[in-house]
Length: 579
Image (spheres, rainbow, N blue to C red):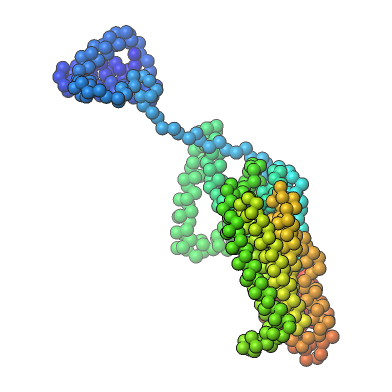
């Protein structure tokens, strides 16, 4: 018999035999029932048969008082009776989640995280992205993913190699837009390698799956600090259960003392300048201890997010809408409206060619040359938006034959007219180059037009049904973009721009120099060829290059090898000789 039941029987026996006595006995019995179901009680040596007899007597005595009033009145009731004492259903305990089990850590993960953190600290302290420090950071991220064990497919390994190439180009090329493209390509390839690292088919990524993966990347970046905190807590609990009491006390003492010392130290530093200087004057290569730790933590955060993304198991089923929502009518209206609008634009271009738009140009106050030099950036945006719309409509169109036919025919017409818009944009770009020379923006505008044109041709193949069993269009356009960017780095836009102005010997060279159109190797080539220009243009350009505002734009090589950039070093050497 349990201690609780024995004590209850004693208390009931010593109380008065009235209604309060009966209520008291019921309360004590319910309490013992809860104890039986919720918590184990230590058994005693009391005879269970004796106590059971006492319980039966109390139960019989109080049966009339505890009986349901509806039952005594003769009214039938469907309410189930209470569970018998000792049953598991008497008291339901809430489910408690088991403590988190820490994820097994490989030594290579820890070493790679530390290396990436140090590389991030070295790179992020140097504002220009085009230096050797950022190349090392990209290489550290790629190498860390490679040794993690999650990068198994050939495609993901090729992406890591490509990211290293674009990272190395950060220390070679200097031009601002090209640096931005190279940095973006390196990061995109790192993320792509993490996504397809465990064997996912890179040639089967539809728009819906790309969006889902993008949201997954964003989620991993946001929840990484939370995961780190949870893992730290789990490891602390594991350590707390295994270590000696002295070690536990030491760690707890440090954890309690750290915030106290931090708060007191901040107060003392605000009260005494000399004491403050002990900490703020510590400079480790361009920053305080706190700054270094913060930048290193940011780099470790980014790498852990990539590692978490790469470790995710892949769902082999493609993420596509289960039920498509666009029928034949909606598809015809959307693509038909775009086709009609582009047809009117094509008529306008035809009128311009045959000379029928002179009145419109006169009212706008534009000469034909001025008209041909404007609007190519807007046309590029129109082409980009149209590509996205046609791809989205194709994905969302119902699978029935009529809707698919409308999507295909409307897509062909829209793509053909979009190619016309791209051709018009390219024509205007060349008009601009012939009139005023090359600039970085005009070169990249032409490159974007080239990429859009190739992507439109790939879209035609997709609409035609080539390899329809896979969603290859997104990956194909990405591969084309990476290939074009590699070719652009090999050609070197700054070399093209400098040689173009040297051949033209244009009189507006001074303006282009002041607008910082020549950077890195392009500026070095221009300086070497200044003798080809007329004295007035040569002297004006020399003064512009040597002026402090222009010369300051090629700074960054302050003797630290991590700031090295090959193009910038060429420009600095040529400028030092000129000025």
